Image (tube, rainbow, N blue to C red; front, side, top):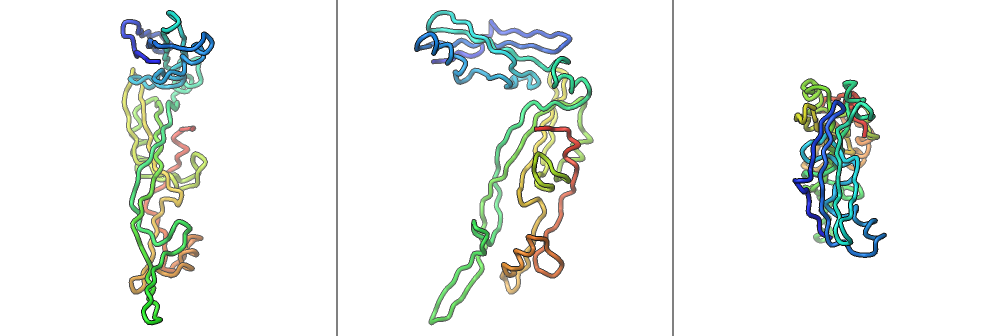
Length: 261
């Protein structure tokens, strides 16, 4: 099957007191199989927006209806209807009450380089060299590439969130958020745009299971302190052990953002 997307002459836009409604029409040709299989498969064609997907130019409008008209055994048209939330929906009620409505949640990843002296099982990496029954051991440190989870939450707000952007960019979560422990999410961006009179924001954060506190391992004669001290430090180090975890990011209550996902 082949999709001919967006028949421009069949598209429509309507604005009422309840919001905006947009319709896009797709032509699908090359249908095959019996009548039952054609009817079942036509809505699964790649490239046809699914229920809940946002409009590419008006993110506040999402797909609420898809209807199929068969033109003949081989061809069909699919009308895809988008609507912005109205007062009669939960999202619309939240917006009109001056609150927040989440439009979409997207995940991606980035990578960073981390200096480490442990293998995948958490054991210290060491290398040895034996000459005439004399063993020379050396602690190993390498640069490892680590994947980092990114979440981007697009949502509406009643006004430009300048104060929220200043408050949260560069901060970690002070309390548990999205089911994760404190200090595991770091806000890196809070962008804003206007669409059809609405304020659309994107909140972006990086996840780090080990928390965003920064460790420092003391070296003695060029070698990291013993594994015993490292293990004790992970359980909560104290002055004098040679391993310290430093708090370098301020903490804010991410629950104050009102983003439920």
